[in-house]
Length: 147
Image 1 (cartoon, rainbow, N blue to C red):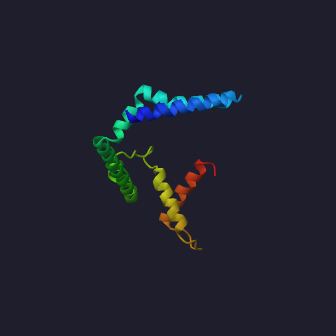
Image 2: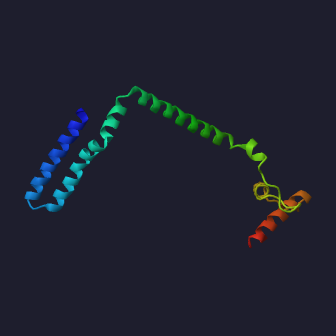
Image 3: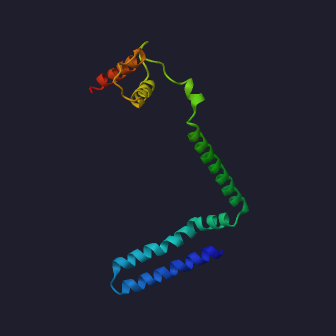
């Protein structure tokens, strides 16, 4: 009841200020002040003020906010741990699609091979059988993309 009375008083004061502003021939400002002063009155009439007032002083509502906070912390913590571990490896292992052609490699393994090949120091010695295979995969990828 106190909150409704305060909101009604604020609205009445705002409408009074709007009337004084309109008397001074500042109609645009008066209309804006009247609009803002009608907001608390509208909130009282819709029951939003009573609902908010009951929520603020309700221990059950605050316990509910506490439960929501704990749930939020749990979700954030598990997400952070999952990212630190590198994702859902066990769940994604079964869902990984196979290669399109029997001899084709997946893009992830090809890029891993490319990183390995670039990480090796360049030397004047000719490439061995395994290295030549790695470079042929890289060349195939580059040709595919027109590079």
